[in-house]
Length: 557
Image (cartoon, rainbow, N blue to C red; front, side, top):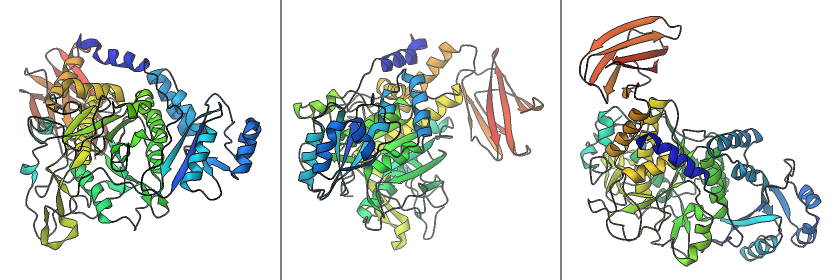
């Protein structure tokens, strides 16, 4: 039965049909400015020209409304043809359909004279009256509150807070320590974060592979209540594990890059998501540390409630990019009739995260949005991390701020860390990546059940998830040895952990030309190998034990 676990998930993915419908354009309460996007039927071929004149030539019946509003169109989704073709090829490979990728070519941004909220809203309704228009979407140009609740070591010395990071440990935590003990720390996986900003100079992040995406900026108008939100997110995921402050859950990931919503050029959520997707490939993980207004002003729900963000999300997950998204802090029931149009779109493929109590009961926290669309939960409070300074500020230094992070904002990076560590491990065993649906189902099936409150799903359990992967691999690859090797790349030593063998083990290291460089014999399930004498480059590690053998690529730095 385990043998076909991921196959069943793949087949289920093929049966999913999802699509945004008309009538789902909304003005964000308290926002004075919006942008209007229009998605034309993907079966219409505009030959890559989304200009006003070409659209009118292709759909002449739009001429009057274009004239009335002095309407101009420009390309809405700024992805290159090469990127769209790449994503389409992956989507066909994974789900046999590239429809939700191709539709990105037919999305336009609308420009009109005097773009007031009322005029844009009226225009959206008129445009949706044409059969050639799939849907319209209104996006706020005013920043939306992030989904948090109000809030190498540099001198003076910072205490070691790792012992306070109970979300890292076993129940009530996600048991990331089990993964750490196996050498799993997110190695090789790239992470992208869509939100407002972060403090690159924080002592936990300075010198780490963190950055703002090339060509993008953090708005100087964004207050620390916005930018420190990202600092806290980065800390949960990627803080230096150096014996001071906090430790990032996947401190060994390849990189963590911010794609800011709010730049010096203004606020543009769609651009942040588009740029994150443009710079991602299969195996990468994108976080939406964002929420949007639902049924009322502060009734926050997932960012994908907006139809344009949902469409971008669906295109990304169809092409194998995993997206982990905050559920929002609005205490909204997504199964309520008000949200039926959103739910009827179907599955975007994202992993939606709710906020649960930091206790073994794992109850829904009062503010968390909930419903059948929310997949998993993690701690919505008491999450020790970097930023803000409401927990401590060492020596009065802004770069030594620490916080107790909260909201679906704190829950989302915890779940993301689990995704990153599991994806890294799965790739190390199979040289392939889990699809977004496979990863989501693994978290759900192996998680610790929720307690009371509206549905937010289980909290991930890293030990159970890793054991499920091992069981699946051991039955489908019974001639293979299941093991981890870390760090990889390495400068001096590597550690090998065997999961299914305690007999004598032989380890052979080969050059890329097939020359045997080293042979070692070991007993037990965990052992170290000195690689300091190897030249920089790629090598092949062959592990032989119990009549089985497996070869893995390693990199010497």
